[in-house]
Amino acid sequence: MNWAFDITLKNRKLLKSFIENLSIEELNHIPIGFNNNIIWNIAHVIVTQQLLVYNLSGLPMLIGDEMIASYRKGTKPSSDLNQAEVDFIKGLLFSTIEKTKEDYDAKIFQSYNEYTVTTKSTLSNVEEAIEFNNFHEGIHLGYILALRKSI
Image (cartoon, rainbow, N blue to C red):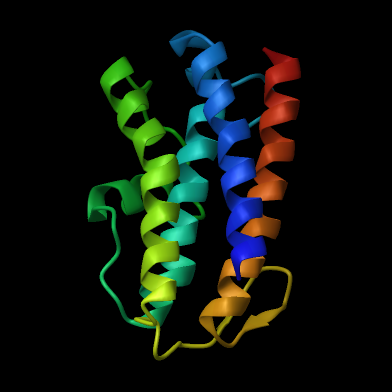
């Protein structure tokens, strides 16, 4: 699983670069034809990883219920984020993955509630969830690239 975690960390570095190289206005901007913005997509991948890996394993997530409610599938931005909120999301990019790897290596993921994702693939264990998460994050990286071109 080291390879899968390495891919996640590489993607998270790309996401971090958007936060560091775009203004707060650009991160919050929702271009015509889009339902969300760059910072929503970044927060969404953090939330989805936690839901797929921890929640479906029956374990406490590393993020709060308010964040989950704001960025889970089917949500969209309700207001612009301020710099402190963006910085908080930036901090979660790596802390959540580092802790997931630590927990995976400690073998805390003992059970998994099967879940069928929107691609109609069924996740049966935490390894599949970690691998699928990389696919999901890649989709959102693509959205972010399209959003950046539209700003």
